[in-house]
Amino acid sequence: MLDSDEAIAFEGQDVIRYSRDRILARIREEYAGHALQDLVAAILRAEGMKCKVQPKGADGGVDIIAGSGVLGISSPTIIVQVKSQDTRVGSEVLDQLSGVVGQHHADHGLLVAMGGLTAQAQLKVDVQRLRVAVWNAEEVLNRLLEHYELMPDEVKRMIPLRKAWLIDESDVV
Image 1 (cartoon, rainbow, N blue to C red):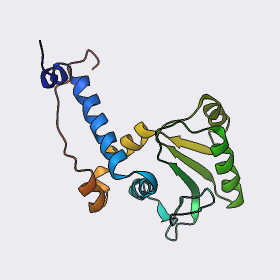
Image 2 (image 1 turned 90 degrees about the vertical axis):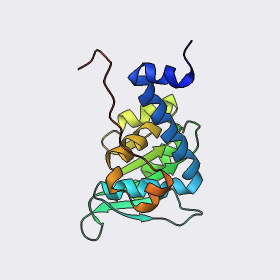
Image 3 (image 1 turned 180 degrees about the vertical axis):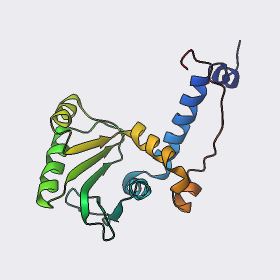
Image 4 (image 1 turned 90 degrees about the horizontal axis):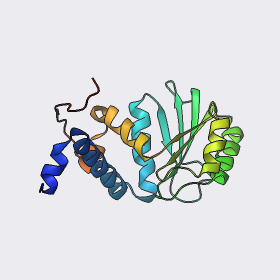
């Protein structure tokens, strides 16, 4: 019988899933509630955007305003709403985000929904896919890993990562 460490090491994919799950748990722990908007802003900055994080409190559906250019007001401009809870977000949140995007004359909306979307909300995203994007927990993790070297020291302290190379035991080359 394999112990848990051997079972994890038995298939390379299990090691990867285990590691990703641990990183996601750390994100949820260190960036719970309003703090998640700071991580999202750091990721957007690493992707070349200028970001203004709104103060905690009644934000009117705007957690982050992101834009390109020196002043951060060139296209594309993005209104970001961040939902850190693990429950699925419904279509009413998308309706609110779409309204705020129009009100601010932004190019796009980004909904960060750590718990994902309800089926009805996903249908709305499919219709608005050129106007609104959604990042779930996996997408936040993918973008964090992609840009980790560019993350601020504070993020690296809260989510300390190091690269590790693994033998690919899968049949896919």
